[in-house]
Image (cartoon, rainbow, N blue to C red; front, side, top):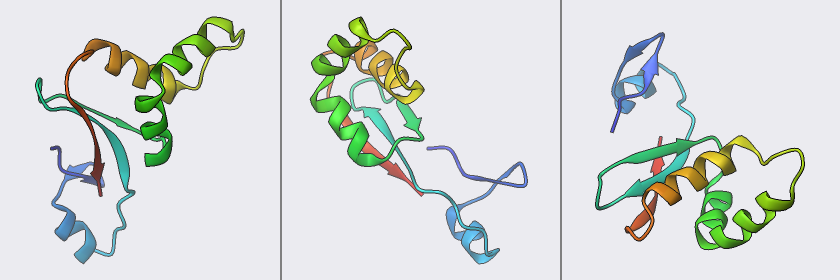
Length: 93
């Protein structure tokens, strides 16, 4: 897992907290087989919804003229690339 950046420099979460810097909590997918992760700006609930209803999002994508939100497109690409693998939701703070 990558260290958070404070002023462009990687620091530990503990160091960032001691400097009074709050780090945004982000969520993403992690493939347990490939050890690859994808971090998103979407909240945990939306990522969970996408993982559990991937087929619905793909069907909607076929019929939407303006395209889907970026987080959905990126999430679908990750899920497609790791199809059949064990995908878990991760939290990074």
